[in-house]
Length: 162
Image (tube, rainbow, N blue to C red):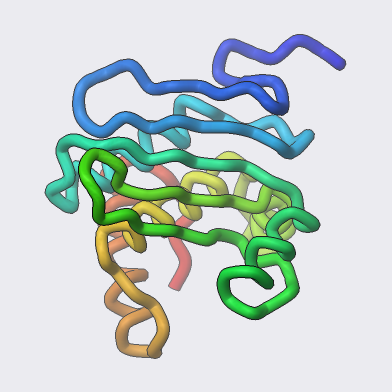
């Protein structure tokens, strides 16, 4: 296995953000290399824009198999999805975000942007869910997509979708 670049962590390792604002812990259990600092920045910026200036979020990067198991357990859909979010309303913990690196790779190819940009979009989407945004109806999805575009534009992430 090649050495991880400074912006990456090897599988099974955790990275903790070290600046003010919400703390973002990232753990990669997928073999896919991910832009750790960019994902932490996307989550932190989303939370701060939504008024969450303190607290802790964990981000877990998994493969499709692990995501299908989680999706089956928590949503009754035994298939992979791109992002799951588990808000917590107790004390310092804001919640957990789980991203499927394999699904993100397929979506990046489908929408013609980089894997890093797709993962950032999914991190923003998951962070918005932690802040109470929902996308279960067409109207709610439209509102959430507009909010995503505002945040992605502010972060200069070109992965916004309609």
